[in-house]
Amino acid sequence: MSLYTYQDIQEHLRSYVAGGATTAMQDDIRRAVHTALRDVAIAHPWRYYRVRGAINLDAEYKTGTVAFDLTGGAYERLLTLTGGTWPTWAPYGHIRISDRSYTVEDRKSGTELTLPANDVPAADIASGTSYVLYRSHYPLPTDFRTLEGCWLGTNNWDLMEIPLRGIVQMETEAADAGTPRYFAIAGSQDFYGSMAIHIFPHPDATESLQLVYNRAQRPLRYSGYATGEYAGTVSGTISTVAITGSGTSFVSGMVGSVIRFGDTANYPTGLDGLFPYLEQRVIQKFTSGTAIDVDANLSASYSAVFYRVTDVLDLPDELYSALVRRAEAELDRYRGHLDRAAINQSAYLEAVRQAMEFDDSRRRPRLAADRGLWLADYWPVEKWTP
Image (cartoon, rainbow, N blue to C red; front, side, top):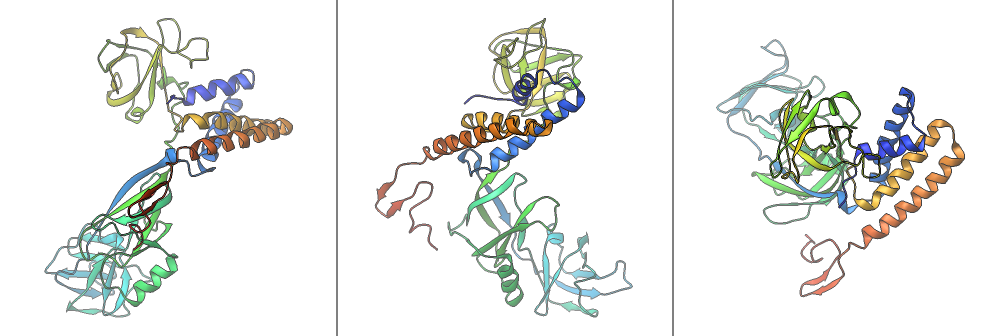
């Protein structure tokens, strides 16, 4: 697979606008690339972005007994535990006392929790009261976009998706632990900008929830044009991975980005530029501002050569043309060339259609199996029916 970069598409768009030397034009170019990359990624559930993940589900906790002090204690709305230690996940849980569940606000210590002002018992609760602390929602991976499916690692049971309202209603009516069977996806109430999965019932033992989901792309930060992305020179020896810089300003965030090697006279461009890079490698390890490791042995030695660090365009080969057309259309729109923007948008839609056909061609042929029909992407139907 080709490795297209942020530098490549910026070079293309600079040529497209005949230089684009002004700060405003450079801002428009970067904005067009980011918009286009987002639009291409969500145009279809591309198999390239399909990955697996896992979430560790916590067992309910009910060791010891509690007392609740509505006001006047060390903290307002204080729930104190005797004979146990609140687990670290307690701030993300609910606590059930006398057939009523309350949200946990904060874990102040191993024996102290506070409850929010709008979700508390109406009066103090005497010491020696039994309780159940449980967790029924978990943040999804930070790169989560859409869910393909989820199942329990211990028994391969698929969980059934239902509305969040159904999860809340069932949890209110019956908060007993068991084997999770249902889930809902909603915005996370604990982490801004994240999604969470809500399950019912909450598990009575530690459990692993397996996921297949469509992820977001790796964000673009390094274009290859900011000073810290090409300052100084670099050296490296053939068949080694260590890169030494002189006057460089490498940072830890560059891990996963691409470093391109030029010569002693020219900064490297993409392969269709005036000074095509001699080699490119992915940065694997950051040591200091002048020392990094790359992902594979160098194919040649370099001594004090110019370089650029840039981010990978996180998309499959077949989507690069669509990305270029979409970025051109967006840039035309910024510049008021609406007729040309419409032409490029049509070209973008055609490129997406072709990419979708190619993506669908990756589907496995259907096979008759002993236990039913194997679908393109899943186990036999019988295996996956709870």
